[in-house]
Amino acid sequence: MLSPLNVVLSLVLAIDVVISRDDQRTAQVISTLLTDSKCPATIVVSDDSPGHYTEGLLNTFVNMHIGQHPLILPEVSDWSSKRRYREPTCQNAVIFGRQITTLSSLYLAIKSQFHVNNAMVVARFTPEDAIRLLFDIQDEKMFVLLEKNGRDLELYSWKANNKTSFVIIRSPSNVTLAKARDRSVNLSGRHLMIGTLTYPPSIIIDSGRGIQGIEPSIIETLSHNLKFTYEFIETSPNEMWGEIFGTADNRTFTGLLGMLVRKEVDIAAGELYISSLRFPYIDYTDIYNFGYESFLVPAPRPYGKWTALFYSFTWPTWLATIVSAFVVIVMLRFVAACSSRYSESPNNDVFADFQYCCLYVIGNLSNVQVQPQNITSGSNRTFLIGWLFATLILSTGYRSGLISYMTFPFTPPTIDTLQQLVDSPLQKVVFGFFFKSILMNSSNQLEKKIGEQLIPHYNLTGMFVSLETDSSAIQSSLNNLLYMAATMYPTTSAGPRVHLIKENLVPAWVAFGLQKNSQLKPYFDKEIQRLIESGLVEHHRTTFAKRLVKWNPKKASDRISFTLDSLQGAFYLLGVGIVASIVVFTIEIGSAWSVFKVRPK
View 1 (cartoon, one colour):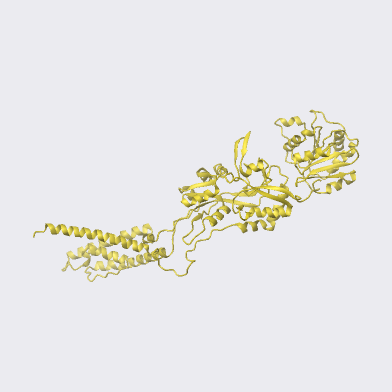
View 2: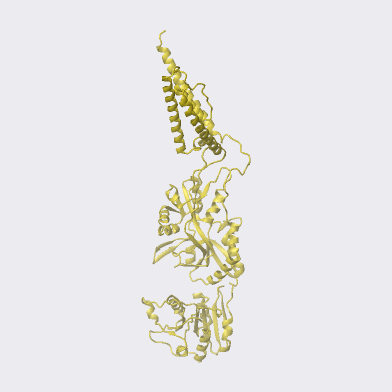
């Protein structure tokens, strides 16, 4: 059966074995089949010796088109040279030949030289030869028109359900009827082999529940609409999407890519990115989603509660406070000393004692109001007014920060940009060499640096397990990172265990993989577009997608009580004070004992 009347590209191959006793009629049928074609010209080729064209049907067909339709008559021998006929528009082609064994190679040669679509072979082959030729080429746009001993013609075609069909053309009057019989819009029960891998949430392989995920759900919908059956074949977990090895003359392919190239499967499913590196070897369906690559890094651990003792102030604030306290102590002592020298009661000013000055300033900073009973210097009184107001602000701010740090956990800054990731000491890990090679060839210098730092890994689960060491950053698709983070490292009451950086790498197109020149492409492309427009693709994506739960320490309880963990800084400080006092006490006892021994009796 032929394509619909509105097909843009048509190719007709005509093979002449024995000149038909009604060449005029056969040429008329071929011309009628080409009537609705929008291709501008017809290419006439023969597989006979160069420069010699078969008489009879060939000449009849050429004479019929002279003056009405442009004709191109290239020689097959020219195709072995560097000359190329490739043009941006489609061409109709009529090839007259004698050898059925050369038709497959001749057809591929035409496809490489011209933009062709439909193909027709006109000959006096047996039906078995015609069917064998169709299965050898396996192209829905390939047709065989057999001339019978009578005036009837038989039109054979290959269908995507891997079966052949034919229609009898009894006279030129029913040629239009034969063209109108469009091939089936579904795959008519064809059984497809689908290569897949474990890559949640796109593909989730569970021994108990079978194969689930975004893409299996889409394939299930496609199979229902296109009427095909299928089974999944899992590729090696160490190969996943696959890579290309070797030179141009001796290439080997692994993973899903290798399964498609070796025609072990009809379709590859597993969030397959469209890449120019794979285009020479496989085809893709229409894009059904956009993917983004990102990094999952270890989440910074909250600061210890004891750090609240010094994290309440920034380091510049601490420095300014210490310098101010030192200046106040010096000023109080200096003013008191000067006042005592010229006072009638030189020993009455309490600030004349340096130790008392120190304790007084520390008491003010600690919000312990030490009010001296005797301040003889007016300048000291004036100076103390400003100092007390300053300590009020400092102590209030410190206590506020101290309470905040004790009741709510604080963490160091997270890695959220690619530049921060490049500057970090984390090992950047990615599965396989595919994405590393893409980044290393990027024109973006930052992406190139990331590519240079990436370490290929060939165990997907092992990659994510390495996050437990707090020394690795994992690159993968955004959906995969969110799923693995939610399932392997869920957020707990103690805080998040992993962190997804906010900046993503370049977006990528996601599609299903197909064999090169697969006849399934038009079926899948049309149906995928329908699923996208109906919102079913997004529905399947949201069904299996995961999200990171935002950490909220206050969610468990509205009432906050001070625990030992919250007040650990106070106990640490008390312990340090006890140890320091014991050391000082030991030194004092030692000094006193030494003096006692040398004192005269």
